[in-house]
Length: 422
Ligand SMILES: [Zn+2]
Image (tube, rainbow, N blue to C red; front, side, top):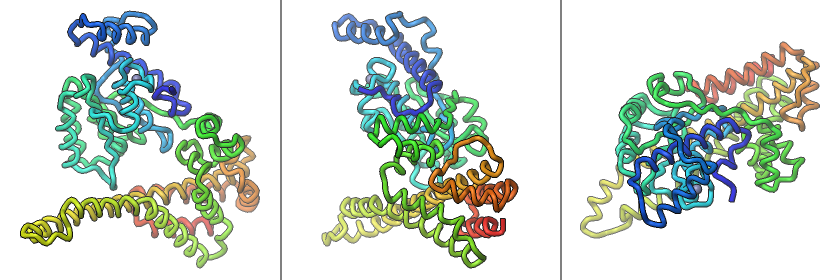
């Protein structure tokens, strides 16, 4: 049985910290528990001690544990994977995340009663959602260990939601643990006051070799495909897995990497912008459409749509509001999915110009996209290092502009013109 941290690729230091904290958390629980005399309790203690290497828990064993954590790292480094694994380790009967006990298992499959994963649908996490969450998190854990709340994109908290969370973190219920995930601890991502109350676990961008190894070992991907996908995904584990296994993801990537070749004039630049935006829209639509239809059907059933009884007219009036709410949530989720898809495309494109730049500089580094290396080489000759750098910057500026809420089409058109003109 692989332990709960097995999916975290190339993060040895973070895993070390989290294991120590989980062992510390277990010691806290043991110290708080009244002494037991029954056989089951003895067995539990014996097993728990064994997992600590046979040593009795130190007096300050709880020192490695705290009630609020932030996991930071670049996209794809495994922030939410790390948070979930740590949540499992906290619920583990043996205290370090064995992967086999019910506590580990239910947390990893998302069914543990005391673990809540908050995955924001839309562009931000609102204050009402956060208040409800904080309230529930304050209850006594039903499994006798910890109430764990994982917020997978804490950088998307609204200011009011952040304040609601801060209050909970400042006066934490004794058995509640908050695990936040964010790209960085920059004040744009997480407020300084929340940051000051949390322990930070920095994740690094995993090396392509480590990603390739995991794809081959755990997902059964052929080693050469695994190496290609790991390099092309630039350290993003989930993206590498998709590229290795999903032919449509490969087709979309190829379309993006064809862009530099197609930029032959102003008209072509605008066409390329349209194609990129439309591809992102199509990809996003495919990913959210299925859930949207199912959600609407479920809500309609719950509201008794189609009923003709005496209560039906009143129900329909209330239903209209609920359906409107649902549509709003779905629209916000679709926008997010579109931006994510577009961002992935821009990262691929940035990789191409980075390759051209490193080739122009004759830097001894492996290309990101081995399959377009020849094209990047031709670009390097034509543009020189300076021209390649300007183009790389145009792509990065486009990403930043979209993040800052510039309309995607406008940002992408500006980028395409810069890429053409150089
Ligand atoms: Zn376990």
